[in-house]
Image (cartoon, rainbow, N blue to C red; front, side, top):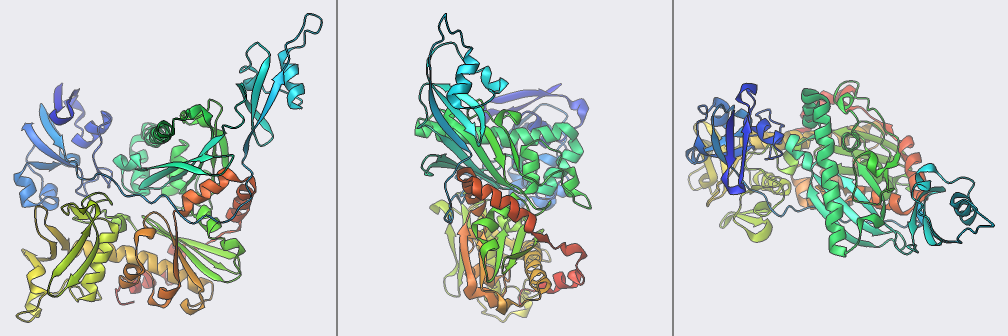
Length: 601
């Protein structure tokens, strides 16, 4: 046995060298997490640690490829590529703080009618002459035929005022005293990258607090397929780890909101969840493996109404409920059903295209209420991952870029900090400017310096690493470079989304000109100005004047499901009305994908 120490965190633990495991997995086993978007498959270069002491194996070829010369000199290593076999002292690289997460969005009109409601009753003490069982007294007071066994156990001897809590027409709990005015719920959006919770007063519909966080499952992989692969590699233990990560995070987020509002979590009676299909499987602890394997059939897509304790959600009433919105398929989840409902696609008489841009690009086209959907594997590049200088939207992240021939690259940085890297909106803004000023060609190639004339203002920004061309957009402590590989990552994401857009429009026998509106939703989409969407070719120029934004429609859908039973029923009907277009089997799709990879499409 040997030890690993993290002095700054005041952590030291023993590990078994006989297991021959990577440092990344050893740290995960100790609940010590560092960024690992690729799930430890050595492709992202993000799981950086600093070697402080002890013996480590020599630097591998893969590490040399991902790390800069300066990082290597400073003792930076990649945890997934290190297999320690001795005492070790390390430090974790803290790069991202104050993550920016979208919490709000457009809320359509709805009819308030929450599933959870309360009724105060008075129980009179039995007498020697009338020794009526308390069960019968409660049944008479509540005008019900049978008191459920789990509620019966909540009764304590004594007369007085009680408050009955109902889930629709089912009695789920009893509380001592009149608590009928105290009725709260939580609406949740679980995204692959971020999680948003909103504390709601069920009597008024008011959002009284909200909390946002990075999805804790990021420690097991950046995207859904990487996390599914983690479950494949680690079996039930991996599935349990992923469920625990997200459920523990939800408990902490709810507790944080309650502490701020000086509210007991026991007064929260329902949590509604909107999420993509994989995240929904994982939060419920259901095997997600079939989602990642052809024919990509999920275990379930229907709505779920369960108790919080069934999944370990404890930051609510002991008889609190969890309601999960319905999905359509493995890649059109409850988040998209929620978004389509919020956008009222089912009620529109015109032609509307809805797109949620993120790790996946889900698209829904409504032609007079007829709905056809598709999903595009955009990958994590648009959220700053798989980019050499990429990072999440946190302090130090470049979120907007402009190029001036005299002033050079003008950077807007979150938190007004020293730039550390590029978040999703930043990398798209950069590619937009590089295209606009001909740093890269329509095919996505960085221009060759020898092809530029002497005095060309672009020359001073082209950096050569051997034969590899890169573009430098920022100097200072952290040099921000755009590589050819970065351009290709954005190109692939752009092609995935645009090709899905084009395929869906063609499948409905329409043209871009026929569209009346293009609605952009999602955590990431809301941060993308029209200029970047059109300038990088993610969306076609023909729809430039038709783009509107509705914010985090997934969370809004969860809010509506919390506040309105009618909305729930309509969402269930809506999910069943979706048609799904599988792009991979669409005739001519491979050629379309290649055509859409061109930046001038």
